[in-house]
Image 1 (cartoon, helix red, strand yellow):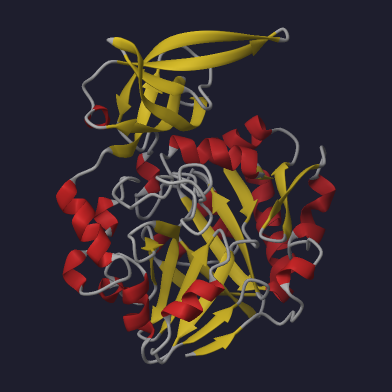
Image 2 (tube, rainbow, N blue to C red):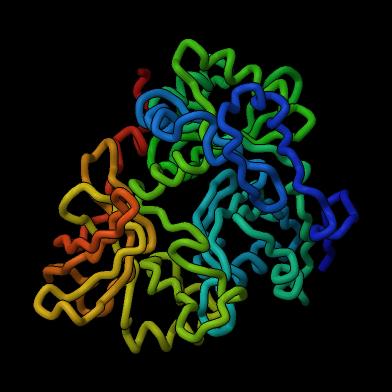
Length: 404
């Protein structure tokens, strides 16, 4: 096993927070100094108004800077075998130029992280995730002929999302991008350099992610926004993305689950089954990390599970506790993420529910606290299990997408 860390040899803890490769291009658009930190990079919670940025994705095109996404290139003769041991799904079924969503676990079957796996060839993969995983990858790759390289600082990325995203990319000269199917990728030329485009995203809408060498970031941003200006293209921050991903029913690390490496209390670790990710666990592919423990869980059954719920009334139910409708003292779950959906006009949430409530069909109450005029008010609203995703337009899957 060979490991190549990024070019900056200073330990991560000693580095100042960095600007992304695209930051100089869009810093003039920042109106409210609503900054946050993501994996050692400066990120934006919002540029001006999260509502406006949200509606850009649902109506035109929104762009999110994904440079801080952690990226590992994994290559070598044993790359497929190693990836199949690492994640719970069968990577050997992936064709080149495809992307899949995946999770990986420790030996106890508890989720470490989730992310996307890009397959470029028989021996070349890229793993993208929200938090750094290099030590776990190194430990897991002992005995495999693979090379692991942290390329986070070398690869810049933009998520281009919304109903006119494909039209804008075609206008930039990416001929054939409309033929990309969901979770497919291809390489396109632009001004003398290559742009890898994957039909992926975190919004539940039509969308693409663009990956390039950091030195070409300024040119790509200028080309994208020049082509997109007549179509209402807009930069967006994480607050708008949070609204979009909840509507899409997508879970987020440190919201719906914590890495089992970070939990300190008992019973706070989560298995893929508790997260509703049964479809990501393939027991027929052979051994993978956590397989034995997950087999025991699958035979024993679940005591709780992450589901979608909708809640009566229109007040966002962040952190609400869920109770049995027939026994107000019996807590049966809690909300992890909540949203009053602007497009659905519906109060939706992701929540953990105890068995048998997560199967649906039972009435429940959500305990919601409202802060009004410096006073807290406790309200009880009826709620029920709802199908995820909450919002899933046809354009998300349509190939080629309709021009709008």
